[in-house]
Image (cartoon, rainbow, N blue to C red):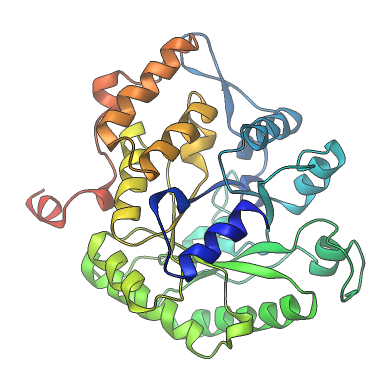
Length: 347
């Protein structure tokens, strides 16, 4: 069993301990953008340099896999092919996964786009038999060629027609996944068009949509875990405590400060999440490897978020890297969903 399977088994059996918290690196940014999806290199003074090439992006992924701290490496199908050709996952305990669909609200990284202004529309590029078996058709029982795990994403907008399309596409995907012995985790985004809901109401709406969309799904076809927006402690605790068989994970969102990253890990674990799947918070860090290692310490309870910022800056100093922000600025919580609801009302 890979480390991911062992941790999921312990979580489902009620034997979870902080060391079982699952960390995933979401390096699937090319599925929502083009040239900009690889991030950028850092200049000597800590400022942004040129964008990474695809080959440099793949090299960065390989370095994280070799570090052996993350439990899942999420990539596009095309990059998974290249990584396997390089032997990146040979003998590794890190589980490769692919983004199995890319709803139109994920295309916000495309320069000059207007897609994200409209309610999400389901869309899928990945061909599951090719990913799972290396074949155009299912080959039941055949060895795994690429991977047997993927992310499936849905966005609910309180829009009847759009949400029905998304649910029907989700049902089609589950049938395809079952036919190809393919497992998935379920990403549910907050609405990508404005809704007149405060944070508490939005959290309630999202929790009900998630549970409603899974109520008709048999045990064999349910997701391995969830990937959702952190809508604050109240919403997360409600969802995580409702069904002990449903493993909840949080997504990272924007890059934010180092404190934002570590605070999200700590709050997510405290209020019932058992998985963190971060993309930009890792990819845009001064040192992705140091960021991941420090995230692990926070998830394990070895460091509090503010202590973790100091530790992270210490690692940057030892590596001769100039931080993008001062220590004081990097200790600041900037993301609204990590602040108490009372402070949001006061603001």
